[in-house]
Length: 331
Image 1: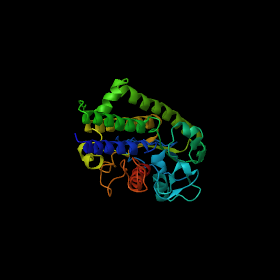
Image 2: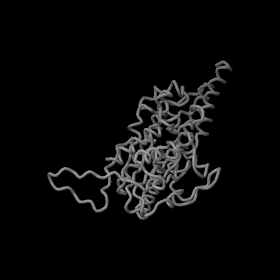
Image 3: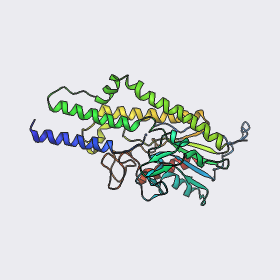
Image 4: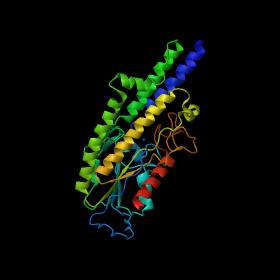
């Protein structure tokens, strides 16, 4: 292969890897679970129409990571600045749609948050965020939680897949046989793809279950909604070629989709186990993944539009997730 061709191919793959490594911490379907019955609700009589569940009002508290905070979505507001919290993220849009007045809404989400940061102080590059659960009180009536992707190490899996595909591409350039799914094979070689990744997802689920119990203890009258992650990749990996080129094998894109589905399935199951409602963000985001056109996508690709965060929701994504949350909240 000519040296110029080698440099072009390797350079493109290295650029994709660099973008993935710099993408930051985040988590992305499943169907939404049934709404939890409000305290004191009585079962409907046989043959009687179901009693509609009233839409909760404030106080509303939003908890979560960068997908909730709205990393780099303008305008960025609040303290600490290291949380990269947007006034146009889905909690803010939900609060506005519900007509919540000042003092009836608190957004304490923070980019990079893990479940441990809900009960402990989170230190960012620009200030510290108090334990997110401290925003709860017995008066709280609505809580949304978007967390778990960082605990499950999803971005580490994405980055590792980019690395494995880069190494595999270099092997091809020097004449070594390539494999169909270098990332899947990597995880299989270090304990089994299902074992290593699923173990992290399961551990994240155990931590989330404890968080949901604590939310119920602090705010026993609140209706709690666990918000899932939007789809990062399309059902057909071939549609990603115009955006990602051939930097990541189609079989590994499918592998990443499987891992994201496992993450959302865990969130759904843990929500159901705690009597909370799971909000499916993956189904409504189908066709709006990172490989969709700039005017359509909800999630930015490794090379995002100027000023936006790679592999994170953009303003349209936050709007789409807000619509899903509102649909669940309003029943």
